[in-house]
Image 1 (tube, rainbow, N blue to C red):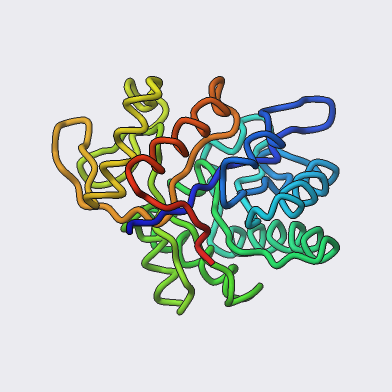
Image 2 (spheres, one colour):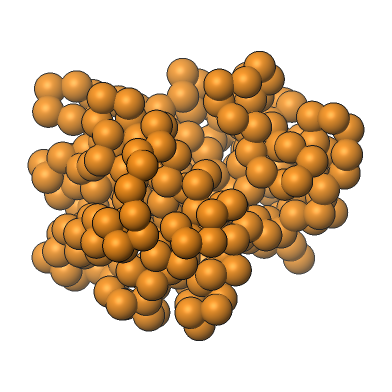
Length: 252
């Protein structure tokens, strides 16, 4: 039977600002990518999110991004690989502290937003992230865009990698995500998004926006916790995967 992990970006509230329905969505996912304070989240939100995920048995991962609270980490910051290496270590280590306190082992690391997309195509950035993950803990799983330079860098470092696909994003013919700045980057219709997930899981392919059929590997499926219908989508995705006899389980 085909199996997939379902991950969700969580812990993105900040100070007095609440984003998403983290506690409810945690009932429908197997892995949580917890923001580490640079693009979203803060120390209190990190502590709370780790505690909730641990209580529900959801695997926990660090979600490091560019230091860009104002832009939610979706803007590229011009910097060098050493800086990327250092700020990824900083963020992973911060979340690991909260995991240690709760007595849970961190499962994975998944970069966020612009950092994630840059690492998918930029070898130097991909290598810096993979090295940071390895140096913090070589047992960590590196989540990256399916068949990207980031997953390749992880394999070269002897890390376990999880090829990630997206339920609510469209794809380019080269397998990259359509930039959010472009039209049709997001899939808003729930059924269209779920159909794309089922196709990716069962056939190992996805149809790009130009009609090209692109090979893809679906180890883990990302859903976005800050979406307007995130909870409804998570419930429906879980139901359909069950009907399609696709089992849901974490990477580790």
